[in-house]
Image (cartoon, rainbow, N blue to C red; front, side):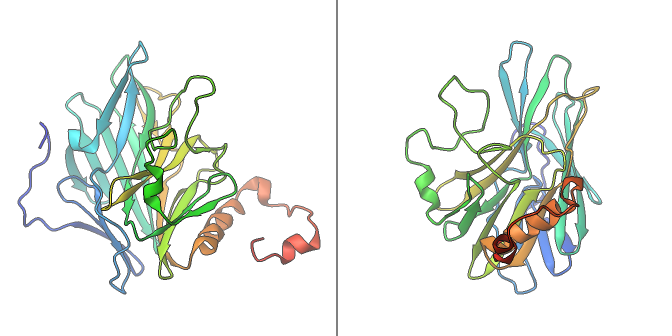
Length: 278
């Protein structure tokens, strides 16, 4: 393991959080997601390699990328912390309620002369047999995750500034219409999103990691960190549900209807209100 990594015996039990009938299990050594299941015992996630990735920029704009495995991990109740030898610390506070898990990241101790460009975590992985709902443009179901790795411009990479006419990736707000993804198999699904009322820019992406796993990425751009501290404007949400893409969209719609700009019903033709996707 890298320097500073917390070493635990092989017998250490996973860290478990319970919300309703759902259980989220994390690695006791790294804090990465290991398991996500309900009382039916059906596993809905694949163990992740990392808990998060982040990127700093120095004064010349040169990128410095850090991963959770570069840090020492510890848990204190509902707070998970990763401490880097530079003094930078990442904290995730886990809240469990109504069958949901909310994880809100905070980064402190950002070194002088460094800017936190983006944060990608928590990291959730799915199996090759899952169907992914990806809100790219009008939204689509991805049934063959491997097609993402084609050796062309559509291959996954973390989003960032790009040369003119060479942009790529799914950006919210932008060519990605919503702040969530969902995956499902045999009527059992997992919703992964960020209910951010300020609509902070983020990449809504997926990263094919081979036959074993595909990683879902909500890569949030961090803006200005005050006094070396950045806190996500809203928590990231994990929720297990029954259904497919439509049921996942209903979860996101319920959030949207809590926003002030949606409190007054929009005047629409009757056929739109009668539509099952309204």
